[in-house]
Image (cartoon, rainbow, N blue to C red; front, side):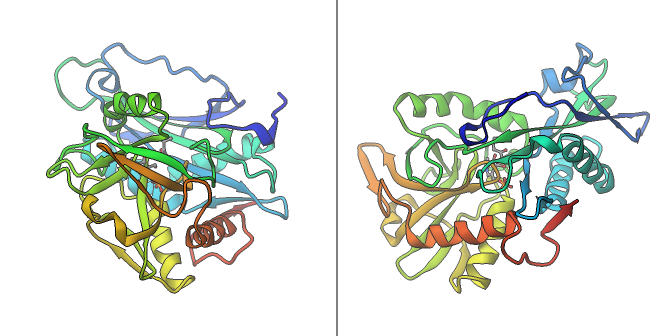
Length: 337
Ligand code: PLP
Ligand code: COI
């Protein structure tokens, strides 16, 4: 298979190997690599009927020296287990989770985009409830699987700003599953996402489900803004996904850029305080927000054409660490030979 590294989007590509483990009678087996990309599962599987499933997203990065970095994979393991607990699924031990990821990356090593292409290997761990069942109960059995593929930019602009539109829909409820990485939140986002794209926006902005006055999420990414006072601000809410990229940026903004770093409410009626804004996440990396459509108003941040200087600095710091060019805070990087 020949891959044109410079033309990668965010699309499924079948690679040779994935990992699969099974939970039955209260225990995980040790799992194994397989070449089969299909999962034959029981028709009564709770993942199919009742959305009993959760997933993760992380990346492997090619370094200049030819080795491969994983970024904060322990945090994905911890978050998957929080999602699992929320949906009454068995936790995946960190050792099994990290072992699976390492095996999958090493087995598909030739498909990690080379250093300098900007591409990365996107890794998708998935935990699903399976086995015979019909009542609204937790499943009798579970599958944990990890597959991966090379990807490029998630939002088409990459570091060029794109525009977003505020949605009337909610992706999650105030005391629902917004903070868990579960498929139901994404199913709820398909229609609003498509409506946004039909109008040529990259995706929608979700407001807080309780009052619809504050920014919560930017499609499948968290929001951040840089204020005129040089503060890094990102929403604090129990119904957004606790983004690993967001927590990394809170740290880097403070420790490396010397900004005040704050998690707080981001009311829609005070966007003027921001001189720059962006979306952040594993897939989105840092994607500058040009402007936001809200009803009849269109609010432009820094520029619709150019990335702002602080956003660029954050991007350089984050990706510098991920690709191994900058020193990482302790424990952030696992390097595979
Ligand atoms: N918010 C949502 C809804 C997401 O799907 C993601 C992607 O994982 C994020 C935020 C960003 O989280 P992370 O930085 O951990 O990838
Ligand atoms: C990620 O950033 O890893 C995501 O999960 C976003 C999206 C592809 C669901």
